[in-house]
Image 1 (tube, rainbow, N blue to C red):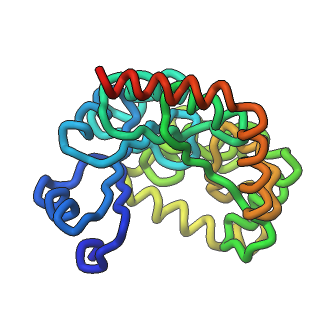
Image 2: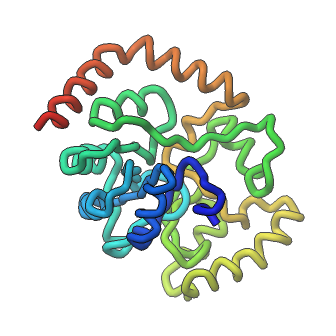
Image 3: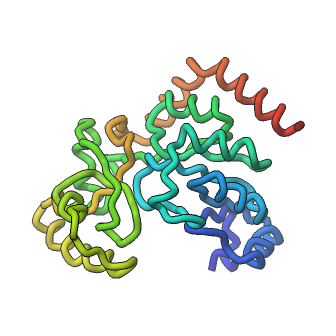
Length: 249
């Protein structure tokens, strides 16, 4: 479907598409972006010939995209993961996980990333539930802490610590394999959503959820760019110089 639609960019997780798919993407000038949660996965994506690699640290919200080892054995933080992948690949690296403001962007650039991937929420937009339930605590920077769980879907993922996550993470709780667990939790989430019970909803969020203060996406992006430009001049120049040196090597 993606090939038929001739999309400009194909970004994927959970492994590497068959080589014939990647070859067809190149033939159609579709940019391919793979996701790595370990140094080894970054190397595998480079070998496959993708155009860019997302280095996804374990701080990120949602599912872990690990594919060479188990997700539990692939929990590398963004600050450690980004430079490890940058040092072994020749394609642009996109930093993801725990980046919530200009400081995180600057840190990612200093580590050699070409770009960052951020998860933001806009509460003026008509957000589908359960996003609506997550809006207020994020807006007020009261999201609490997050935790990893297999309980939401059967695959390891990060979400806001609430009653549902806590009970599903209790020792001895049986978790069905993906996607059966997802269907089971959905049967609970639908009536919980109707009843306004956010404590019984899977609420995806990363470790930097409490840094969110976005009420308008264009305004947030403009402010982010201005803040980065104001404080990151020397860092950006140093990072660009380092990447050029690495490329020449």
